[in-house]
Image 1 (cartoon, rainbow, N blue to C red):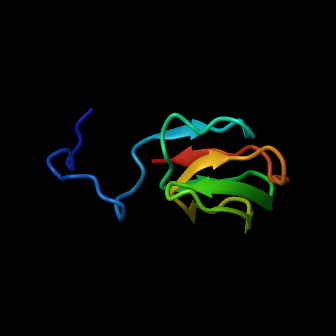
Image 2 (cartoon, rainbow, N blue to C red):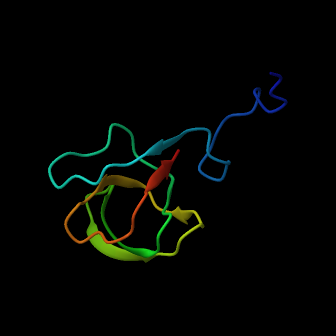
Length: 86
């Protein structure tokens, strides 16, 4: 595969280069902070950001919600099939 953009540095405004499924967890942070999250079913997502702020947000299904999340909590989260993008 050829990547015409390989010579460019990846920044926060760049498209995601990694995507992984998230299992919400009340105890542990994710292995890597996200740049955005996506959900298959709309609902609330309780997150802790990389600066330590914890809040519950509403995320609509099918769109990337830009957030630098360190943790996605199980309690307070009703959205399903959450993916993180970085």
